[in-house]
Image (cartoon, rainbow, N blue to C red; front, side, top):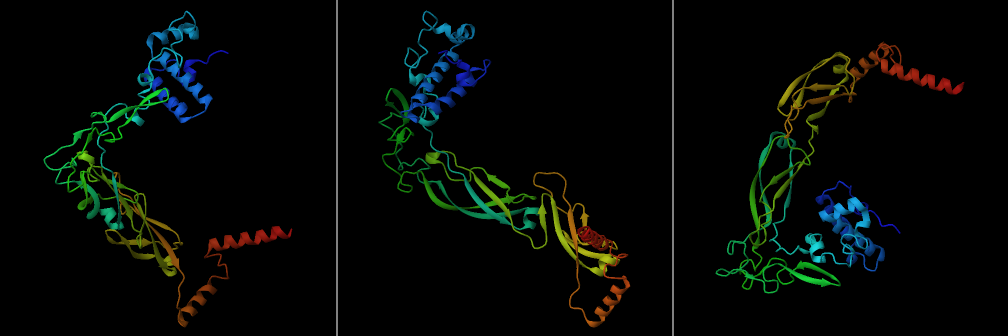
Length: 378
């Protein structure tokens, strides 16, 4: 049976450089590794193919021979013999494969002390605060560097000692079947040092629980979903490692008058039907105070009036949004007898229930209804 092309095995083009080949190899080797697929012969065979392809294509001399002669270059009498095979004379597993598991087992390097965790604080703002910007004081519980040992975790006058198990490497070599892999030292957990005399204040952790108060400046124009990052204000790192960050998550409360959409503000403005019919001038609210709005005669409900520059300037820059006022024509309530009589007189003056001369939309609607029922009876 003909052997599969090495480039096809790794899923790379023939022009792929060593970096691309190595990346493909890592991905596939992790997937088909025998330890991840115990008892799966197909996975084991695939793993062998991947390793063989990798060994050939990352060796400049072997790759050149393969590109010219194909698999024949490594058959009996050819270059390299059976060395590319899984059990042949190729490189040792720890040399060829150590970098693949470096992220899992540490790759033989000492594990650095862990950076402090990032924290999140949820902050509610009013619309006015979000639009104009505000400075808020917040109090957060967190882990901070111990003042006594300054994060080392060791008692005053002492210091962490080199781990006797891994001799400071942070890693130990373990054999699993015919594989040799590196993993974090079980004694020092990858740090390379152990604390014989822990600090009395933090009990060897290098950090203590404490609340702190911060002054947070919220820039003008933020909106729900925006996040403000405060570098180094998260939890302190282990054994003097850098602190994490604090993320302030913004939520803007619902406003009784305005709704925000991007940089625009929307509000509903009720007007009586006399104002809608005859026109006039009314006062409408903005975030900067009241302004006059001229309502033309014969204004219909849901009409939008745009007041330019009365919206929001986004925190990301750009032009200021607009305020859009949607008028809603109100039906009068609580009428006295005089008002009812006047309305009755007005209705009669319209010349019928549809008032086709004064209510064009009403006439169009009822004409459509009449046509609909006429069509049904045909």
